[in-house]
Image 1 (tube, rainbow, N blue to C red):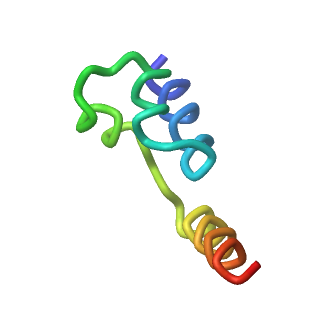
Image 2: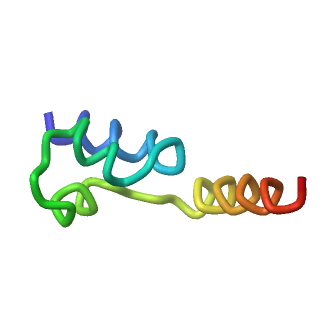
Length: 57
């Protein structure tokens, strides 16, 4: 079950706000959500590129 929650959080990083993710996961403390959230360097690069392209539209 832990792996499923971890994967859920990881796949949604950058797709929604951390508060939305916290609510979906049912956490009352944001620190708990942050523990499940895992950003790989590939995912971080993808998010950064998306943000960069949004800035210069």
